Image 1 (cartoon, rainbow, N blue to C red):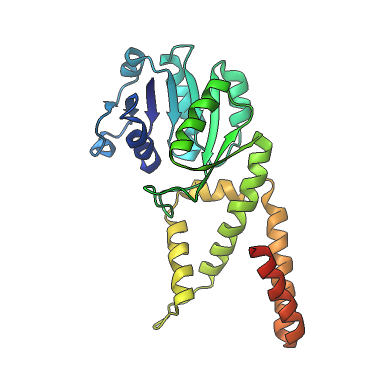
Image 2: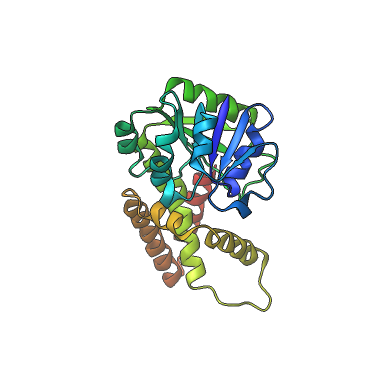
Length: 257
């Protein structure tokens, strides 16, 4: 299969490395310097090269806020049989775009990122495939994710955003609150250092990505849950209520089981 990767960032490079030994892969990147370490794949900087390549699938790995525009820019140079694919962690606007674009599509979300995941060993990681996707596109990504031994789930576009609000918005918000009140420690403990490493990793992500995940319509309800539990914990601490603290901790442990 001829596959065009849009973007040579961390995930674009990851998918290029992953696919280039079994498929004819090309990478389209407007900044040639980002393709310095791309190997075993064609390097494109011009859309005319895309037209000549005539890909069977385009995998969009550009920065989240440019995902739809990147599709719009490349579509005039694609054969009508090409399948559009995205790996966006936020699907806002994509369902509507796919409905109007006239191309088959497959939408996925690898639930791991280059900041925290070990890209060489993903057996404990997950991936989502959107149910409304083209059948052949779903088969392609299921086979690909199975080779990585990922746990695969299928959700609708709406279901995906609900899952993301829970699995990303809560840890993102909690980490941001921790970092916002964090003070330098001359002798930080192990737990503090681990939280600090997570916070630094999170803040190394693109601001637009963090914003869009937190602006998910389902996020406010999750934030309310955090506020409610913090309020409950503060009351327990203020009253020094040992019995209630035990109930609180027992509840937390049950959630972790």
